[in-house]
Every structure is written in C-alpha cells, then in structure tokens.
Length: 158
Ligand code: 4NP
Image 1 (cartoon, rainbow, N blue to C red):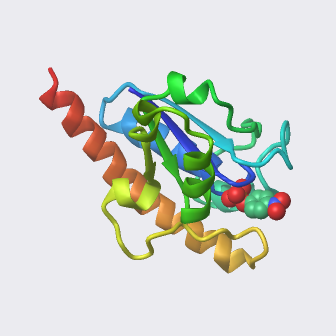
Image 2 (image 1 turned 135 degrees about the vertical axis):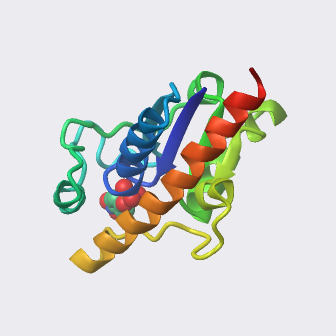
C-alpha cells in the first residue's frame, strides 16, 4: 500500500500526516509506504514549518528531517491512495487528473478517516500556536482511524 498526503505547501499539514500515519501503522504491524507533497511549489526543498516541528516535538515526534516537494503527475501512478487535506487541495488535484483510474485514488483525508467534524483539516499557516496544536490534534485522531482502516483492508485481502 502506497499512500500520499497532499496539502498546499507540504510544510504544515501533510508532513505531520505522513509521519503520524507511518508511526501508527508501524505500531499495529502494518507495512506501508507513505509520503507527502504540496500542490504549490512555494516551499520545495524546505523542512516543515518550525511551528509544526515544535508542536510535533512536544508530542515526541520528529519531523525535522522531512523536505517539501511539489505534487507531480507521476504520483498518480506511484501511489494507491492520495489524500487531500482540504477541499481546495482536492479540487487542485482533480484538475490535474486526466484518467478516471487516477481520479479514483483521490479522496479528502477526513472523508477517508470517516470523521466529519471538521470535514477539512484547517490550514494553520496564518494562525497561532493554538491553531498548530488544533491541526496536530485533528491529524493525530484521523491518523489512528486511517491506520486501522488500512489494516482492515490488508487483513481482508490476505
Ligand atoms: P500547508 O500550509 O499547506 O499545510 O503546508 C501552508 C504552507 C504555506 C502556505 C500556505 C499554507 N503559503 O502560503 O506559503
């Protein structure tokens, strides 16, 4: 299973979504490949936003080694599941899709997690440190749901 997390800049939401899913799958004995990307190229090559690095660190999670990259069309072939953090990210990905087969890999992160409050993962970039904690907490909860769902799929297909 190859899963790609996508947000706008790949420095706040999707890097922590990537790392938390990796950790939670590892904890339940599920082997997956997880990566993240941004729809925009603003921060390509940069480490995650310091505010998210520090928030994650407070929960014992290190994301400082991750580096931002932009979503590329090959990702449609290279991943089985592509999860967009919000409706704008999903719209941007759909606009780049030229095959129905690719469109079927696209879903909103919260929809796949089956959590409907909130339906979008809030973008904390222009927010406060509390907004970073809130976004982290939402992603932490959703990651658990997603890891368990992927584990069920893996068990069912054995
Ligand atoms: P992200 O947050 O999409 O969660 O990584 C943002 C990062 C950068 C910008 C906006 C949102 N920006 O405008 O540079």
